[in-house]
Length: 338
Image (cartoon, rainbow, N blue to C red; front, side, top):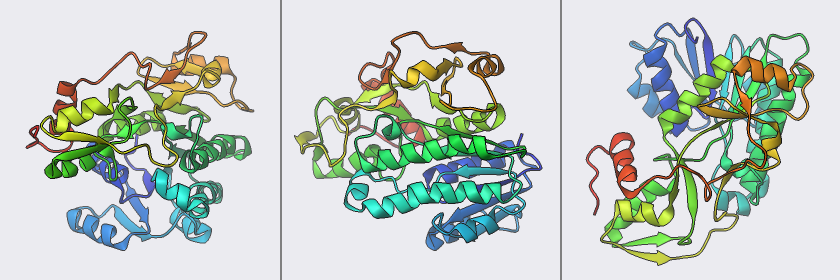
């Protein structure tokens, strides 16, 4: 699928970008070019050392910011596939710096779309978040707007051979700034700060997130928001899995934080189809495909009446033991409960 293709990854030095790069190089050895687009020169330097040009001549490193429309247009020259992973994603940071979050997550998304339309890109997949589903915080609201921009872009592509879609998933285990590495660090203090004892979250590994993006690239008609079928965990079970000997301290929820997360609301479900491994939320406005065409293309069925996908009412749950196994497999092979 990606052999002989040129790919651009915005936010390419982040947790997702690095795992995506690793996966593509492994599975598609004939990939023509991979452009790592990010604004962090230190992380780019570190990635260059990990992937030296003498061994990986297909890699390109572009310093740039998605807020810079001109730089994005230049970066997209000769590119076939764009993966948009750049974002401001810390919920409390966005609450305190709303204008900066809007510039990156909303204007940055539109800049990516404009750059794609100005070049000859054929496939775009944008990363979203469960916080974009019925958002109560600014980060989630900006990602909802970003989703709307990318999905609506299918209606302004004209005669171009071009498809836009998005992927929406929950907390990524072990990603930068997430709760698992935070707990692994804090357990050395003997106390784990827990925001709320009833809090639940969806859980997905970085590799599963990358696999879903690759699935979207290979299967999208354009306009879908793909949603994975993933387990939930209770924050108290996560604390027990990582540090059963530590005390927990209830510190209260952070600004803009939800008690439970949603991936598909009851209203979303009216336009949601079941692809077996994934769900897909279909666009509310599409000038290219009907719901029946999406169903046929994906060999899918509509979800049942009254369906919704919430971390508190999920049918699949992580246990203390499965959390420990996942940490060993995906984060730290030497991990042991403390």
